Length: 591
Image 1 (spheres, helix red, strand yellow):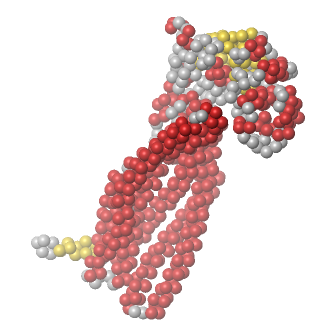
Image 2 (cartoon, one colour; image 1 turned 45 degrees about the vertical axis):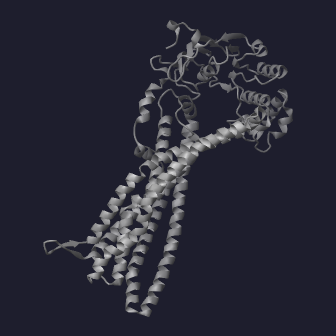
Image 3 (cartoon, helix red, strand yellow; image 1 turned 135 degrees about the vertical axis):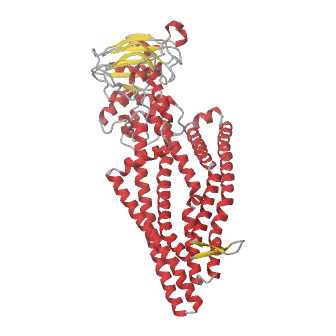
């Protein structure tokens, strides 16, 4: 397979730059909602949501009946009719029991929809982040902080907030449809006296008052609550940074203790938390400002209704029961029409979540060079790995290495040498297809590709040792693994092959982890093997033993090895030196 870099567009990153700023939060929301609800599992979740909405409508109807009950109950009190009061009390108990049952089942269905949608969202984000080259794309491009939080926390918030707010808005629409008619009927016509004599008749004056009152409240809520979205997004970012710092410190606990850096790390952690605290205080102050409006609005809705309905009562258009019914209808219309007042903080949080997920989605959707171990291209003419004038660059096209030519044939072992920081590891990543920012031409062999890569820092997942050695595959020969463990001097670990999962990074030394990484590579019987200083933590004897194992493989793999130590270099057929781009004359530097 052949990959040819375009020197005019280094790494292909230019094609994705403008795309990062396209679309909006609504488009991002639709991308994260429609594909789920259009699939079979999503249609089942949509049915649950519909049932929850139906139950919510039933709850609205029960509330409507309870509002009508006010007229019956208070009318009976006004007439001092004890039997009617008793019957109304029984009706109230029945309505309450029905409301409890409906509300509990509705809440359960809401949670089911949230869980199912979150499950799909999480799997989608994990697949795009880890399963389609997104991990390397984000690492190489930068600019996306805490992707783990976007998968774990933002997916949860998106599903829960969306379900909650959608039901709330739909129910407000239903309540408006039910109660506006009742309120209009109960309002009658209010005669307003005019300064010059006569009067102005206002039909449905309570509806007019409710709409005006709620409309002004919505405008004030938007004005006061608008800064909440930015503060909420910043709080999520700083909380994630604080948690990540603590997790990283836990992983490096031994090194910190040996360096005596405990107090320094405490200061750094306290500094990150101080950023959390400062933004939390800003958020609390903004919430307080908003609450100074929202709280009195919430408490005065019922009282305002008393003053609004009083003229109709004093004019004799309503009895006491009718006034109480009109108060309930007025309060419901105001609360439904002014729903923004009550949900604005949650809307702001949802906007912050969508902003983070939009940036995450756009970064993962970058159509630059595909980062995966199977680069696109035509089949090579030979069975060799061929590099022609290949140089590694930064994502913005700045050359890091001097161009090199290399031909690696099956069974050969080549050492790649150069000063620290030259770009040897990035060159191996580019050959494997995990670093797209190169110039020149890489022609990969048609047989036995992709290669097995052994990085300098081995990764051992927290599984049983046998599964960790066969990672990322599952299953395989434990007997062969046991033999290789003995061969590299780790026979004591054979008993752990089928043992419980462990944190191998904490329990093993760097040299032991490197030997396990090499055992894992050999278990895959590679035709092509890329080794990035994977014996740097071994002593000379262990290094010689491991390299001899590679020589004894049948058929022998082609090996490209980043090496510095004499024993590793001596085991190679030839040596290729890599030089930094600073050594290249200006007229020869890669574009």
